[in-house]
Amino acid sequence: METDRTWPTREAAEDEREDSPAVLPASLTDAPTPAPRQTHPAAFVDSSAIVALVDRDDQTHTAVVSAYRGLVADGYKLITTNHVVAETFDLLTVGVGVAIAKQWLRDSRLAIYHADEQDEAKARQMLLAAAEQRRLSYTDAVSLVVMERLGITDAFAVDPNFLAETS
Image (cartoon, rainbow, N blue to C red; front, side):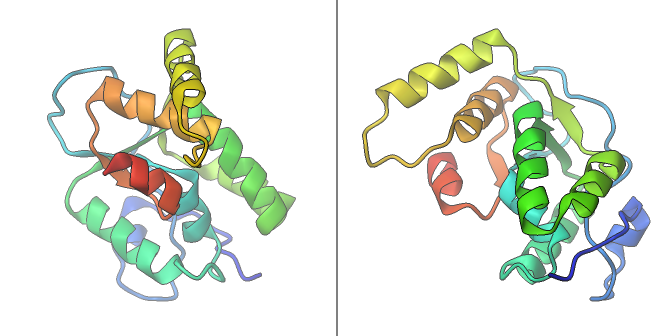
């Protein structure tokens, strides 16, 4: 699989060249604080979007790069959770190899919200109350709880199960 091997700065990410690597901007380093209203728009970043950004062979790579550039251009703060970081590392390790997964983990500057016991308890309740046909992972449930806590309504994702829950 062909992968992006370097992580660009915000300026490089805004570069419109198709051959430029795509990852999350280096300028997003502060973890968010819970607040009912956002001063800047925010989008929650799912592991599906990160994997598609890193793996150029992913069928959604081009669309995800375009969406990412749009979010950056529109001033979105991109936020994820520690659960998504763990899931992404595992997915990248299996999909594109441990070296690329480690490089992403080392170089990513994505704002990370650390889910707490209350978030995890709500996620467990959500999963236990869910219908059998509802295909939601534990990480996705934690993500939905955190999105609600932070007042985030936009998601950057390509996973149809996760997206179905955010609409």
